[in-house]
Image (cartoon, rainbow, N blue to C red; front, side, top):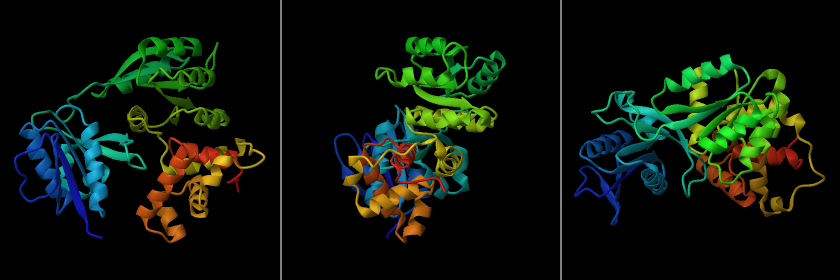
Length: 350
C-alpha cells in the first residue's frame, strides 16, 4: 500500500504546492502529500495565513486518510488546525513544539475514536487557552479532595470548574443547573451515592454531561455497574494528575476513556461481577463468525494490533470488523462491547 498524508482546508486556497488535489468544493479543498511532515508544514502555513479550519491525517490508505482529515476539519473550531495522532508521531521531533495533545474524537463515518493533537498558531503562547474551555463539575464528599481536584483542573488553560457537590443529590442538581461537559463523580457519597447520581444524570437525555467515576480499590465492585449504565469510565482517586486531565479531555470529546490496556485490567478485576444471561441476545445473530471472534478478543482486552496478530489479519481489516461489530450491536465503544460480551456469556473470566 502507498503511504499518504491528507489535508482538508476550509475555505479552499487558490493552490497548494507539493500536493495532489483530491477534491475541491464550495466549502474547501482536500489534497494528499508525500509525507506527514509536508502536510503538517503546509497546514501550518495555511493556518497562519488565515485559513478557517484545517484537518490532517496520514496512513497507508489515501482515501481513509482523506476521510479522517475531512472529519477533523468538520470538528475543528474557528481558526483551528487539528491533526491525528498518527501525524503527530510521523511528523518528526521538529513538530513537537507546535502540537498539543487534545484527547480523542469520535468522527462521523470512522469506526474508532481518533486520537488528535491541536496545532498551536505561531502567535499564541504554548499554553494559551483557545476556544471554549471544558466545563467540569466535581462531586466528592471530602472537601479536601474537591479542593485538590479543583487546583489540578483550573491550572489547565482549556478547563474550568463550574461547580462542586458534597453528596449525590447536590451533584445531580449541580449538573442539571450548570450542564457541565464532564462531572467527576465519587462512587461513595452520603444521601445519594455516586452510582445512583450518575444513573440519574445519564438517563436524562437532555443533559450533555459525561460522567467519570472516581473510585478506590476497595470499591471496585461498583465499576462494572458504572460502565454498564453509560459512564465514560472510571479513575482511581490516587491516579496521576496527567491521567485525570487526559480522562477529562477524552470524556469531553465524547469517547470512553478506557484504552485497551485499561480494559484488560478491568476484565481481570471486574469481569466476575457480570452475570451471563441464559443465552446470547438476538442481536448477536447478526454477527458473522469472524465478527464473533473479534468480539471475543475485544472482550479479552486486545488492541487492534494484537487482534490482527492473533487472527493473522491486517490491522485495517480488524478496524473494519470492530466498526461493524459496534454498528450491528448498536454499541457506543469498546467498553460497551466488553460489557455485552460478558453479560451474554460470549466471553467468560478465565
